[in-house]
Amino acid sequence: MLPFSYAARNLFRSKSRLFQTIGGSALVVLLVMSALAINDGMNRVLAASGSPENVILLGAGSEESIQRSEVPERVAGIVEAAVPGISEALGVRAVSSEIHYMNYLSLDDGTRAQAMFRGVTPQALRVHPQVRLMEGAFPSSGQAMAGRLAWRKLGVSEAAMKVGGKVLLDGQEIIISGIFAAPGTVLESEIWLPLGDLRVIAKRETISCVVLRLDDAADFTEVDLFAKQRLDLELAALRESDYYGQLSAFFKPLRIMTWITAGLIAAGAVFGGLNTLYAAFAPRVREMAALQAIGFSRRTLWFSLVQESTMACLAGALLASVAALVLLDGRTVPFSIGTFTLEITPLVAAAGILTGVGLGWIGVIPPTVRCLMPPLPTALRMS
Image (cartoon, rainbow, N blue to C red; front, side, top):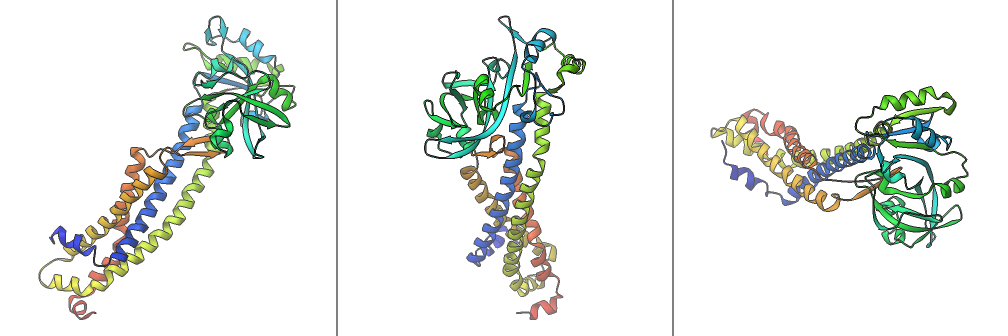
């Protein structure tokens, strides 16, 4: 075997080509890590947003969109009295009437952005226990409570959504009374208003849904049976986790487009890297022939070239990993119904390293064929 130092020294024969190889592999690895982090982040936030203990009662035929659903407001009282197994604390059952509404709001500086609003009563805190008030108070009439990432969803500064700030919704001035957190869920990107206020603003006589929380011994089939028996109410029962699972499937084409875009850009970088490796290795045909003439086998020479290529690509993977930690880790990304956080998990980091190794092994094939395939007498005479 050729010593490892031989491969290491050959890396610096042409510093410009070395930097091109490292840069190309770094771009490919960074794109792969970005696409994987985006897909993982979106799946994670949608999976965490839906609780298996929560059941959503919404209008029949509107199972794919709560915003289009219409449910009579009296349903909440009927459900509370008729459905067994609802979680109860201090004699109050966890049943929440809600309106889900998407519209544009305006800020004091003239900025106009689309936001997700949820009309709620204090009962919403019983069915969404992950919600914690960080600052201020629960909203009363004329007020709203913003999720701690609502400013990222709106694309404005964090100071624009602070407690005491004012926003305009359909010409109505609303004061932000509090900031809440619901870690890892889309709720953090929403703005909550009192149910009565949002009913007036949205010009609705009905609500969007009734959310109830079951206790540990309860069965979803009881709620499903109630929805099917009460034909007069035209209801459909859906686990909250299943609803957000459907949303995850809805956003699958977006995630596929992320991979396709990353793949197309990466393909260009890969072909550029192949050209760089080919340009670096192809002129060394006579050198490889001389090494064969003094007794080194083609397999040994191939392994040495693989070492060179893999070291360069792994350097690019290391550079991409550092860039991902600095530029991507912890960054929140807005999408249509909320935001999600990018995390460079061990799985994402391992995928980046494996991509770098793969590039090193695949990229060396064309120049290796060029260097090692010619017959020895012909190769010794090549310039």
